[in-house]
Length: 497
Image (cartoon, rainbow, N blue to C red):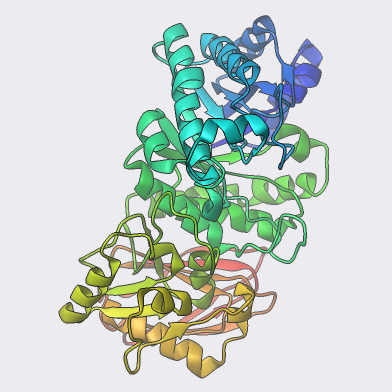
């Protein structure tokens, strides 16, 4: 069963959970939102909640039938980064001492503790510069945060509570992980569980925006592959969103195989806009989201292999992997090069794999459909091959949404015909594939679109509309043999199964 949860930040715990009246209001809101779990935070922005209050809040929610976990947001530390005020300087001994104290207290109360995605550093102060030696700052930050995590988070938490599982949440900004201290290979190995940030927010917003909605799916599914059973869920928020984009965050999180959806956070959703409107929309769509999770949870994500190597930052074509879904390419995120793939799309995110040139040459010999980004070909020195598409986003990935129809069709056909399907649709329409017998169509446009989907090489069973997620809109479906003609309203998801 897919779970929905929310977080009470340390400031909310301090304000909302101290009194019986406040507890009753919070519990009622969680029940009205049909949540099954809550996270109670012990530390954020320098506020450290006393153990007695954490225990009181934990016991009260548990008595009401909720699963209760803890959370820590490492902001407001004794010394902040000299580059990013929300980050800490972890070379500073008092910072390390406080981190150990935070996790001792939190693990003493909760058997599971999540860390919000502020566990990063880009500090280049004199102390950090001296500590890094001959290493680059990127390598130093990765080593520092990994070593600090073991010594000041995991070891203290497990010493106080051997049953405690500590979750590291990786941010949505996956192209900067290594530079800012998220060392996903070692940290995923050492932490008990991992989590994905899927907060794409409003794509046209200048603040916190400019991410495609499909980045939530890419990040979630990539983390699931990275975790190898350790990845539990996705976390998103209402900031700068409208109800349609907020619901799309929820849909992408589920499509990426999250086991749990975390709604950040109680105060932003219960008493602020746009969170209040988003909450109303989510409550209405919850039965459909539960059904979407049920339909997809035991089916494998398949499609065009789009690999991103862990712990390698893309210096160019940043986040390009996430934009392919907006072009109707059925993306299958990968952490490794897939030698069994029928179709592969290689960009700058794949340049760091050892032997990537040999991989390309071997896949060509096998007859796999390969397509490349402009940067991938330039750096590897490989030739483009006649008839093979080359993706060139230029200065702005969003320019791909204006790709000429003939160019878009040629790119899609090259990659999807080996998968046994052909799609005709405008940009900002996504196609997700599950096993060989289920397809998910999404229209991110603000207008209705006509879609033609030919499933000539997939499971021959006749498809029906298994689920529609939309705001009181109707989807029309017509079939001619193996071809399906779909009229998909604006901001609507349809499952064919």
